Image 1 (cartoon, rainbow, N blue to C red):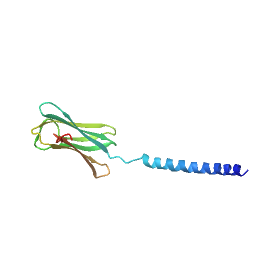
Image 2: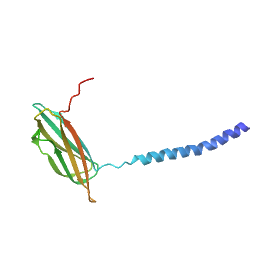
Image 3: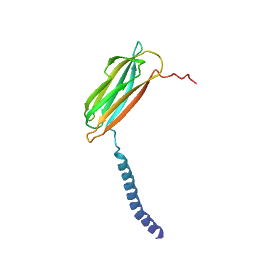
Image 4: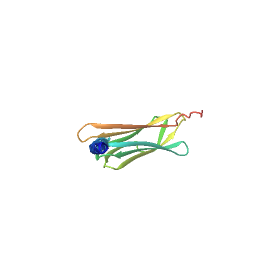
Length: 144
């Protein structure tokens, strides 16, 4: 009889505890479900070519409708522009990508940095600035 009462008490406590656990776990997942995103995601990449030529691509993916964006690529004088435009201005619709590609010629083997920048003019005023950097001719470390 006592064992039967303990079993009923355990079952009576188990249901509320399970409900509390479900609510707590569901509530924490809900809190982490919505993370703020920047207006755009910026990616910078290179592709090696022959004759000391390197293709540099700046890609911007819009995470919202962007009415006014400036994209630009910046590089030192030791890298010569062979082809492409270094700057672009315009809108990028939500979910769309804009690519800016240039072809550079390396004049020396010195490590150099290329910087891709984006400036988003926000509709409520102000701006969002983002940049990405990639190294051309990185120093090679000897295997240890």
